[in-house]
Every structure is written in structure tokens, then in C-alpha cells.
Image (cartoon, rainbow, N blue to C red; front, side, top):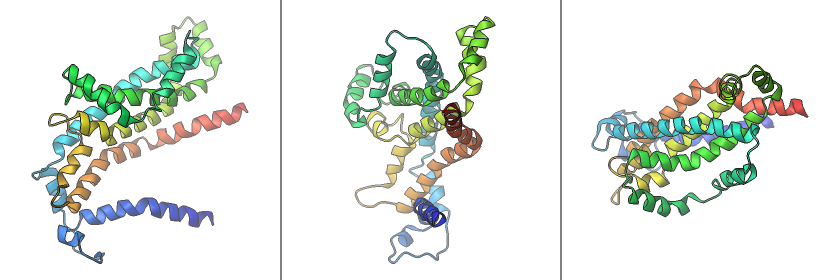
Length: 270
């Protein structure tokens, strides 16, 4: 029974991906054929058009890479010490800061588009990398902090106290003791932050332009009032998925370790 249910859920998840692959290998006429043709001669022209055609997504892939990598790097650099502070230090306004950090995740993104637009327009940062990265930090940083706090809290205090007794500073303790213990959590956070930045569309379409045009926006070049080029759109979407898939496979062990370490330690405590 469980195997059948798992197989059904897997089929529901895999079907859209398989259908996109089939569509990307068809001509536009075959895509619109009814009933759909499951037997056809596959072509690679759609991938060539998506990469090297009039609406090439290659420049947008570069843009998405710069924005996503920069956002992820800055998020981790800021989130690790912030999470450590929330987990270990006695801050005067710890509860207030914690509530504020959590509350930033509750604000609907669509309600922030106009304020962000007005602020970036005032400082001439519309359609710039720094403007887009700062906006992405506003929603990725709180998420990363709260995700990593749980990993920091699971580290035994005795390890940290031993380092402090050896006259290690807080920074040295964080670097040599805490970070090696939460590598799995950092890997999980990196994946989620990169994924959110790579797939983000709302702020990208409103605050970007010709200079900063992420791939999620560039794919809409294949959609027009007259027609939608479904085959080329499917090819572009599959190409845009590759970086996330590659990173997920490369960091698979760390992700699994990071997702299970909290449950194992928590179970041990109880």
C-alpha cells in the first residue's frame, strides 16, 4: 500500500518534467497537435534556439548566476554569525530582534514591490546588480538565520566552553568549533537560498530591466500576444533547471546529513 502511494506521488512529481522534456524535443506544429503525438522524431533545434537564437537566454543565465551566487554568499556570511548570536549570546533585545526577523518572513512579497521600487529609484539602483542583490537579501537572510539557529542550538555547550577555557575568542570558537559542526546545515541553507534566488520572478520582473534580466524573466521572450513558442519555452526552462540540479546532486550527501542531524540530536536529548 505504501509502495503504491509512493509510486503515485513520484509519478505526479515526475510527469510535468517528463512532459516538458517531450515538448522540448518536438516542433511547434507537433506540440499543438491533438491528440498529442507520443511517437515522433526528436529534434534539438529548440535547445539551439534557446541558447543561440534571437531570444538567447545565455546572457540571462549569466545574470542569474551573478545574482544568485552573490546573494547566497552574502547571506551565508551574514547569517552564520547572526544565527550564532541568536543561539548562544545574551542579547539585550534578543526576543524583539528574533520576532522582527521572523516577522519579515510573514510580509507578502507583492506588498514590498512598490516600496522597493521607490527606494531603488531614489538611489538610482533600479536595473542594477547591487539593487537586486540587496532586495534578495531582505528575504533570504531572515530565512537563513532561522534555519541555522536550530543547528547552532544542537551543538553541545561543552564543546564551546572547552574552547573558551583554552582562551579562544568568540570568533575563533565560531570558526574552529561551531562551523565545522554545522556544515550540513550550511549546505542545506546554501541550496535553499540559491534556489530561491535563482527561481525568483516577482522582484526580478519589476526591479530589473535590460541590464539585470534573470533567466526567469528572459523565458517570457518566448511568450507573446500572437503565440507562445511552447517547445522553445520548455527547452529554455529545462536549461534553467540544470544549475540547481547539478548543485543538488553535488551536495546531496551534505543535504541529507543536514536534514537529519537535527532530528537525531533532538531525539537523543529527549
